[in-house]
Length: 255
Image 1: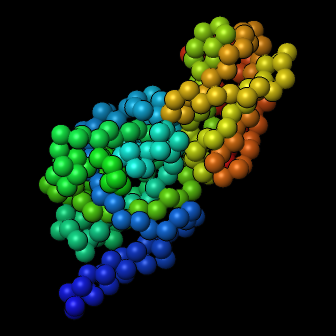
Image 2 (image 1 turned 180 degrees about the vertical axis):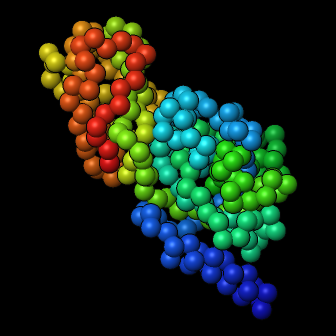
Image 3 (image 1 turned 45 degrees about the vertical axis):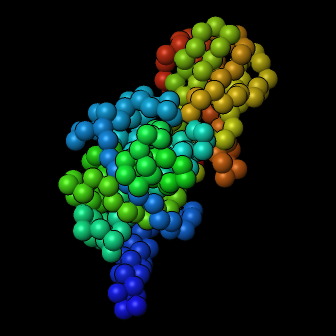
């Protein structure tokens, strides 16, 4: 009984210390999970991924990123979420005590049903698991540990600069990647408007890519973005009439 009390007491003290020192707004309570790492010591292997982001530096996320297990990924609708993660030092000797890190969901960690949930199949349902970039993971844990128990909570995303929009596709198909989104971090709705059209609803294609099926070549483009907490921002004429597929435009709006 005394050992159990000490276990929970140590964990509680760590979390209370983080809460007291953390100025970032909490959007959820602490939840137990586990965490591994991938992508190499320079995080080069984390670029791209199931959320549609390309170079994570250009898209505003850097090395503080993570892939999510099926239980957290939510078919891509969790892309862009920010999570504060702390290693459970009361359960693992591999934790760096008193540290935490905030990471952005940029990728999917697929299940491996050939391995059991507790021995290699870390991303198998129903496990809540973070496969973090190696530099991010090593902020809270020691490399030799490989996998550690953690606590996490969703937090608000802090971004530098405005939301970025990358326009891909061709002619009657505009595929727009939305990145560097602050606040909630998660885009739940998109609209597009050409200089000669009304506002049109866009559909989620995959990850944080949204598409429109209208010929908009030669028109300046405006975009309206809604996050999953209901906030809406509008960027007027962010892409000039000379825009080209493959171009990225930084807006002056942010959540």
